[in-house]
Image (cartoon, rainbow, N blue to C red; front, top):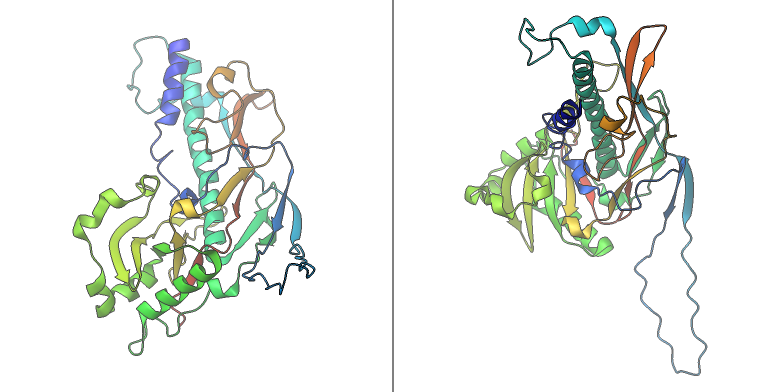
Length: 364
């Protein structure tokens, strides 16, 4: 039994793509205090402004009183994701991947059940991580976050109040044949973010149509440098996350790394795939160390797991220290079925709301 359990734990962590996914959510970091038992999160939106200190004519003059900025306090529930996967015991009669068609030795039914459940947990955690990637895409492209209830139904939208100047349209749609100035559009938004957030934009993440339009522009195409794609200069946390590195470009005082992110997801209950980055948009980001984008998790009530499976999952699905997935396995006697269940309450929060932006490059 211990050897089988060790094998199953290793198998779960080696599931394809279990750790190699989520390009946009890679910019969000789970802080040490990001795992909470709270049902609600409080978020304060504070604007510091760009005021300069007034001059005092002499030291005998009364000081000018600086009033604390007014902030907006929000107390909202964490979004809830809850999935389960039932395994009727009759399913254990079926051959599992990796097994021979005929078993010479006595079948280990528990081991076979555990393998099925591990695959189910891998799929369910991947679905939740896809939802976290959707959250990151919403925050980075719109400065908002759509919250869902326990049934996955959107309940309301949390607006982080980004400045409209950080989410502009191109002066002329990039797919127009005349008058387009891609460099000017990119520089203008970069300068705006620099003035508001005091950071240089270093990374541009393109949607598919925005990249095609940019690369069809001869001036932009000739300026893009590949130099063997400079792979050694890439942030390690962005490698193998689903985005394609397209090279870099110098525009004025800025040097940008260029990514094409064409990954898609399928919303639950539909068959229509959607791009995480809308095809007509370009996301503007500074270096990761200049960003404060947080991924935090709300509380999930502790539930008693099946004693047999406690050594495998222990109430939590282990994927490093970045995610909080609560899992359990229980037996439904009336249905003669084992059920694997996973719950999570993640929220992606843009603390540095003034340090990024998104350009709608194609407006036609």
